[in-house]
Image (cartoon, rainbow, N blue to C red; front, side, top):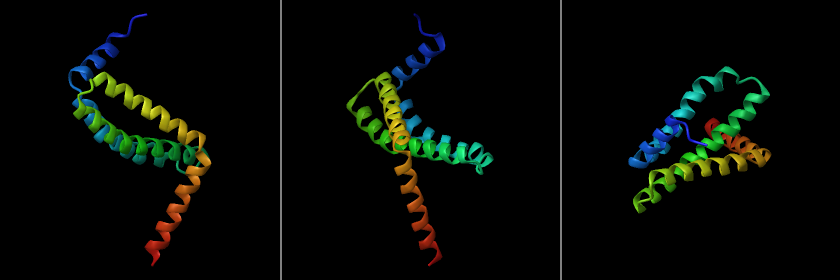
Length: 124
């Protein structure tokens, strides 16, 4: 089974320029979170499904952004190829997503507690 030519071209570009992965993780994740937050996140903000989806997506992308940037910097300066950077980011995303979905109640409780603490501090 052959890869689609656009996927092969994408992987070839990443392999030739691994710095694209570093910039993608460093600036692409926050950009996606910002665009999602001002569009879809606000569009469906009243429904329960939206609260669950927002918690899962923002926690996952926030975790991948922080851990992924650290991972990308270490692996990039070691000299790891771009395809390995891509797949390590993909695996990190899948692991963080699985963690957030499995531990959704605990993550949601933690986020709610932090929001209450921030609200109380801002009132003082």
